[in-house]
Image (tube, rainbow, N blue to C red; front, top):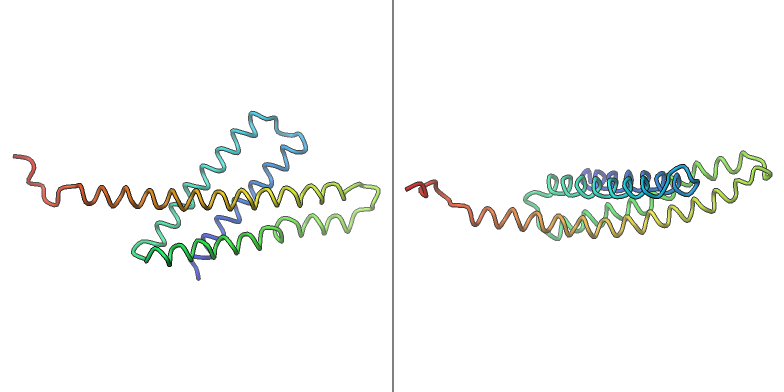
Length: 153
């Protein structure tokens, strides 16, 4: 269960950071160029971290078990993301007067969470493909490397 929760934490952290990034771009505090640079950096960092965590936890395990673990972590993150992001928003909306106009913020927050969840699914597919590619390259290197050091003749 610990590896699933660790991968779910990586997924959930990426969703929260993505929501903050997209939210800051929506309110205008980030211009398009820094937003794109930050988005590429966030997604690249997420992919590298996800592949590393999955590889370290899945070493020596069957491929179907690893795929199940990644899918379970994704489902946990997809269920938890709206709770983690939207609960504080709705709590704040309940405490503010209606004249504050916070209902627009909560509606936009729901859209941003939906976009972040869609990006998470896409990123998980990419990360899974990257993990498979890294594993295939490592296997190919092990097979093509000489078993003994007798090439130095």
